[in-house]
Structure formats: structure tokens, C-alpha cells
Image 1 (cartoon, rainbow, N blue to C red):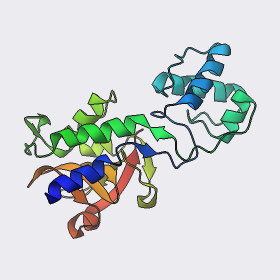
Image 2: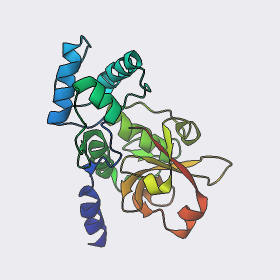
Image 3: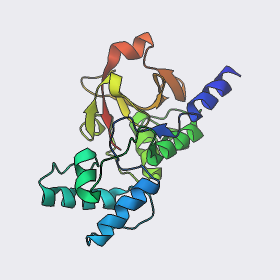
Length: 217
């Protein structure tokens, strides 16, 4: 029963808020559709479907370059104002759809056994599990934890949001274990002793072996 309650709690954070004050890949809604409409008016190749995908991020980068704005593919106040000619709204409640899908799908494999080198629901190792879940959401990641640690943007523990990858130095130097942060100090991962499970970053073992996090989304 306790495990079931944990899953319910974690699923409640599967659709999370973007607290960074920026629109980014994964966000969706009327504001995104409005931005896409303006990009279309300016001749950029996007689809006005209200979902911020990789193609839109590339269009935003091109627009930012044309305006002398840092070309990071994120829509902050400067980019928003230059594109739409008005102040950016409060987006503290913007939904990160891709992160929600990743967290939701990650829960589908709770209890799958650990298999060294495993990359399928018949058995996962830690990086194989992360790679598989992200691939289901249309995001390609490298195969091993050490290489996964080299992609994305570094984030501090205080900045973690669901969907970030968390890394640990376990049996060898550098990143040798990885999981997906799901909120409230917890992460889901393929544990060598328990299979796919949810653990706390505050547990003594994980807190002492934690080396950092990366934001892929």
C-alpha cells in the first residue's frame, strides 16, 4: 500500500510547472500557439499546434539571431517582447508537457528487473532505462551514464525540476549511475538491487554519491 501511495504522489507531479520564467521545449497552450502564429507570419517554418517542439526551438534561435538576442531557443522576456511587441505574461504555471510524459511513462516500468546492459522492459540497467524512457518521448540520449552526463545543461540541486537527470559516482570514477528526477526530492531509476524503483536523493547512499544533474528538456 505504501508503494502504491508513492506512485500516486509521484504521478501527481507528472505535469509540472515551469518555474524558470521562460517558455521552453515541452510547454504547450494558447500562449505557445500565439507565438507560433507570429513566427508563421514572419516566414518561419513551424506548425501552429500550441506545442513547443524542437522545430519551434530552432525557429526561435533563428529569430533571436536576427534580433541580436542570445540564441538559446528559450522564450524569455526579451525574446517575447521582440517577437510579439508586448510584455511577457506571468508563466509560472506553464505546463511542461514533455516532462509530464516522461515522468508518467517512467512509472510504467516500476518493478522491471535490473539487467546489466539491459535496454528493454525485459530488463534495464540504469542508463538503458533512462535512454528507453526518453526515446519513448521522442528524445534521443547516449547509451551510457558517463556520456549522458555530458549532454544537456548543468543544474543545481535547488533548481531540479521533474524530468531532469540526476547522476551518481558509484562503482567507478565519474558518472556511473543515473536516474530521472520526479519531484519532492525523489528520483526513479534502475537499481542493481531492486530493479526500477523510486528512491530519495536524501538517502545516505545516494546523497554521498551524488555528483550533479543535467536538464535535457
